[in-house]
Image (tube, rainbow, N blue to C red; front, side, top):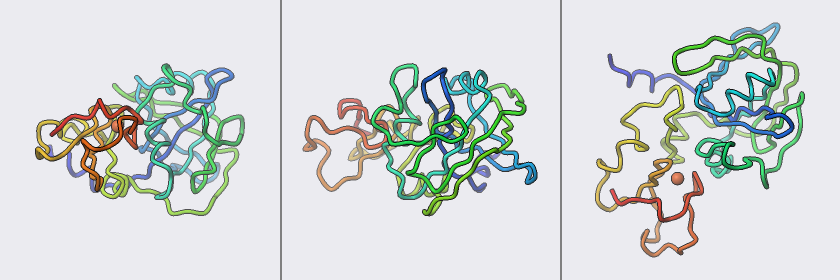
Length: 217
Ligand code: FE
């Protein structure tokens, strides 16, 4: 089976947000699609291992924030490559409230609503959400392809579209000797300054981990 065909499908890049009791939380998702118009129902796929999955199951409510080509990559690093079990993902991040869920203004829009059902696959829960509130904001939506090709982004292993030959897993061996790769998120450093000359407090622009987690390819 040629799984690379899935790369020809179109996806966006989203941050799905919800509440962990009184605390806002969320994670990056790319498998998200509208499935009915009236009422507006959207399906969102979240890995069983994501802490956000448990929070959505309990709160039965979520919001989807549509990221733009200009969205700060640190937002993706924070929500895509770190766990709310370890950090407060919203610390220092500007957000507003919509239908009881946190939403970002650094997006080209969001929608929020109630979980009206779900389906369990072997690795992911597909949540069906009836949208109750929505807002469109200026900006060009970031496609998953743009995230990979222009932003040098990679997929966490929990992403439904993750493929084992992505840089996050395989580039440590495959990359040329001149490349430095983040061992946490797979980001490949391609800056003008030689990696060795970056300051000691430099951090990965995607996952915010220190310079020390980078490995030479
Ligand atoms: Fe990283």
